[in-house]
Length: 223
Image (tube, rainbow, N blue to C red):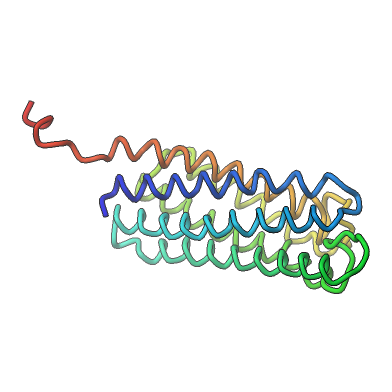
C-alpha cells in the first residue's frame, strides 16, 4: 500500500469515527434522567464510532512505519494506546446498555444502577491516561518525522496535558453534574467532545496530505 493510500484511508476512517462521537456526545445532555431509547441510541452510536477508530489507529501506526520504519516502537505505542482506549469505551457502554435493559424504570446509567460505580475509572482516569499516552506518542512522531503539519504535534501535546490534568478528579466525588469529578461532565463528556473535534481536524488534514504524497504518473513526469 502506498503512503498516499494509507493517508487517504486513515483520514477517511478518522473523519467517520469522529463524526459518530460528535453526534453521540450531545445525547448525554438531552435528559436529566434519560429514557431507555436515549441510552441505547447513544451507546450504539458510540461503539460504532469507536469501531471506526480502531481502523484509524491502525492507519496511524502504518503511516508512521511507512515514513520511517525505525519509529515502529512509537507507532506501536500509538496503536496500542488507541485500541485500549476503545476497549475502555466499549465496556462502560455495555454496562450502560445492560442497566437500561435490565432495570424496569428510567435511570441515569452514568450515576445510578448496578454498574455505575464500576464505570468511573474507565470513563474517567483510565481513559484520560490512555488518551494522553496516544497524544504524546503521536506528538513525538509528528515532531520527529514531520509526517503531519506542525500544529498536529503541538496541539497533541496541549491536549495530552489537559487529559492528564483530569486525573486528580477522582478525589472530588462522583457527581456527574460537576465539571471536575471522577464521573463529571468535564472529565468524561467534554473530553470526548474535544477529542472527537480534534481527531476530525487531524483526519481532514491527513486526508489532504494524501494528495501531496500521491505518486506522479509517468506521462505527467515526462511532460
